[in-house]
Length: 418
Image (cartoon, rainbow, N blue to C red; front, side, top):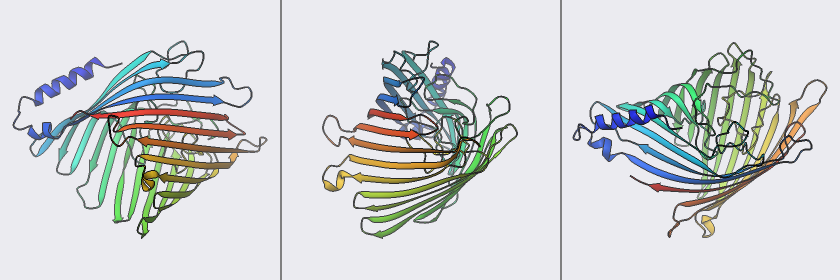
């Protein structure tokens, strides 16, 4: 639900800034505001025998308003960013809840509607900016999930600096998370369970996540990145990334994306993982063909904050292929129909296969595969211009987890307000 104290803080801050219209000309001029209407249908069928729930199916409508102010004039400029979120149920019930589209209720169903407001104050000096409050994050250490009706936001602070040419520095501190199907903030947790082998002694929660890192543009075609992160008492992590795009001629390129993450425990867990990933993509005239490989080594699978999007090559629509000892590969194909006279239409399909999952001494090795299809069209002109229609289909089969058939239909329209 919308926090009254946050609404009051926003009103008070805007009122205070408006007292100096001359000094705050840039604050107003550089402010942007958008309203996104997001209509989301989600259907997941469980195909394995003995499933406790045969189907999850819900339909919902959401609205996301984003306001990013400019900065006041002066040596140190200040501003405000806000995300207002409102979602309501269109269809659910009969034991089909649990899609993460809507906030659960106490009966095992979903609430009729929910709303929230995320506000962050910001300041900028030269080419260094600081934000404090509630916001989304997207980097190698932490990435907010936006794969359902409303986005996931965190409470904390972040500093981003581009003072040095080719170098971006990024550091932050997070204390709580408001998940995409929740109206309340809560402590952070490491993703456990399943076959990743992560065990936590005592409470699996922490109110302190720190990260520091950045990226350096080595050449026009190559970027190197590094992040250190620590979920206090649960895990420590060092992540490395190297991305190079090699031009091969007109309309052709080869992209290499290499990733390595080392995760260890921080007192209350047994986290011990080395995650290696590589993705190579060849592009030619609207076609893209990609091949990927991912390997887990160590006493556990990959470690990351539950509910977020992990920095893994084979993290896809349903699975992350990050269980203990798992090896997986991916084949992917994309096509942009712009080259054949249909701008706005894009197609993607991929197939992933994983094996060697540690199921225990007597259970043998686990295997899984996932096949995804995605078709997206953005209207280019007329009264429906900028309306996006997106269909996502996935199928998962496994000998150690759920067999799933899934469909998502997402309609999204973003209206610029400022």
